[in-house]
Length: 75
Image 1 (cartoon, rainbow, N blue to C red):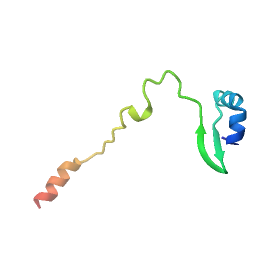
Image 2 (image 1 turned 30 degrees about the vertical axis):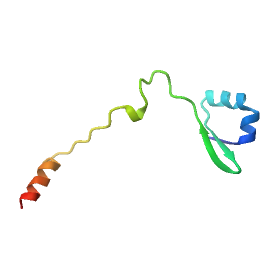
Image 3 (image 1 turned 90 degrees about the vertical axis):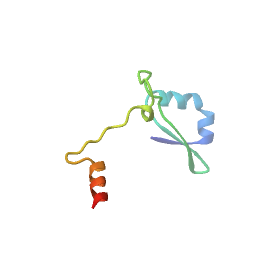
Image 4 (image 1 turned 90 degrees about the horizontal axis):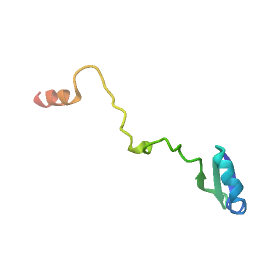
């Protein structure tokens, strides 16, 4: 990850984007504070973004949580 100023990024934008194309991540600073992170785009083979993909299903052995809650309510 490389840090560059906004002025440097603006003056050398073409070269900066070439670096990103080659896999580098850039953090752009304005007045010493990070304002943007520029990183390579996801490969075209990804059908949808990760936040739209199905979530991981977790399983546990033993009684289901709903069964335990219902049992506790009857006590």
